[in-house]
Image 1 (cartoon, rainbow, N blue to C red):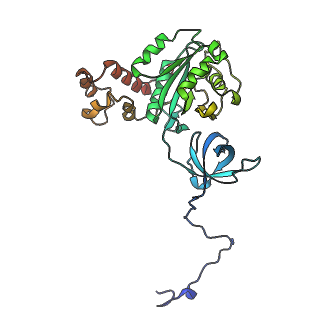
Image 2 (cartoon, rainbow, N blue to C red):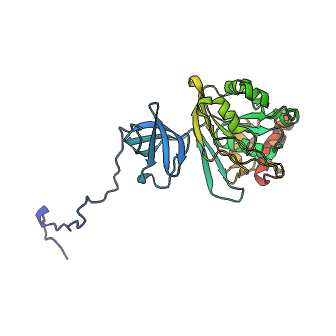
Length: 336
């Protein structure tokens, strides 16, 4: 049955009135082409501090972004009040593409991954040589997360006045990872900060480490005008430190020397999200040897082609051992 006749015009069409008096809903969203670009410095209970043209601006995430969250290091598009004045609030309308992502899960059985930092160039793994004792498995896990997320690793070993670094460095010699060894006297006189700063120049560096290793103390030395929270102590019974940093924070190094992102101390670093096939990219001398591997090869099974590749002299056997040790960390607990 025809409702409006054979040749209806617009006057024949009955329009249901909008009783709420507001505009009809639409799926077309504004493009915000005039939005300002900024970098997320910190996130605190739904409020984000974004650096825009050299000034910090408080912003919130726009509803149209849905569940997608911005993290420290993200490049974002912001509209609204960009003055940065007290009690003003801007709106983040777009999160730009990421060049790297540092992720972790609570443990290896947790499928929910947490993005810790975005767009960092390198990951500085801070570890004390004593008080608390170093945990190589934790270091391995951080390295896997760095390789998986597209970050270059850096080892920062603290408290060398309490224990020598040789044994720990020997574990990572075949990975060709740059490192800096510091002691408490060098932290006090500024020598440690100067040597670490050389490795950070011109880069965005995320710092990770379990509690009590001196991570925040080092960050305070690197960026003295932006001192973070007071440092904690190491429990004499458990050998664990107290969390002194509760949220990630990006801080600029002096003289435009780059950025440091201080992250909360961690007691575990789950790798449920890591695809083992991506870790091999950090081993360019081994990667060509995977061409003949069986599909979905874990690179640690009898049919893995890497054994033949190494046997033919294409790579050092120690490098294959290092790769398999890192991949195996996904199957082990941090305390192993």
